[in-house]
Length: 228
Length: 84
Image (cartoon, rainbow over the protein chains, first blue to last red):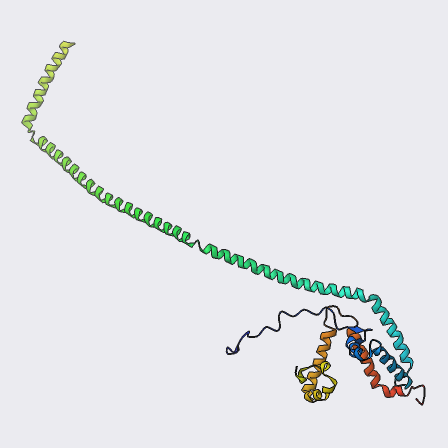
């Protein structure tokens, strides 16, 4: 639950960035006694003061046998010799190895940080490009408007064509009907006239016309005979 | 700064009594003091870029002295001389 009344981020963040480690530790003389002790005694006793103190303490402990010399002393002496020799001989190599490990860790962390920064920068550039692209939206809308206008025009013309075709079809039908009617009327009239004429030829007229035709034919045959 | 906010190293000998009277001797106080001492020792000698043998050797030497002190009664029996 986040208490919205609590102020957020009012003080400086104490966790990050972590301050870097100090380069060297506190100064220590002979590997055992911190330098502060020598500095503490320097004003009163000078440079040899702590050493005199050490010698005096050692002699006191030995003479009063507060420190007892036994087999453990020999063991401690030999162990100390070996340890000091090992440190003096292999110290720098081990230190270099440890430093190399540290360097590798730092290098990987740095690489990750740089990679993250790079990816974020490319993201920012992409975003800016998208924003620039957005400015061209007017052209896009104009093109779309043109498209739609063209579609509407085409549709309108199509419908116009359809209307024209339909009207023409109907008018043609009417014209065809009229021509057909007139044709039928003429045919019927011709037929009726012919029928009436044929009917009006009586049998008497037929005989007279046949006889006249025969006479004409004879006259023609005579003239033809003569011509040949 | 103020007396009870200074670390022990910066307290002068004459003010030692006053300084001791300001620190708390409850379990939490003692634990806090031990933790502070340990963390300051670590920060000074162990968590550094180039530490030497000093960091661990001081701890080992302190352990040697402590163990000698705890077993002193046993060592007293192996003295070489009777009278000092």
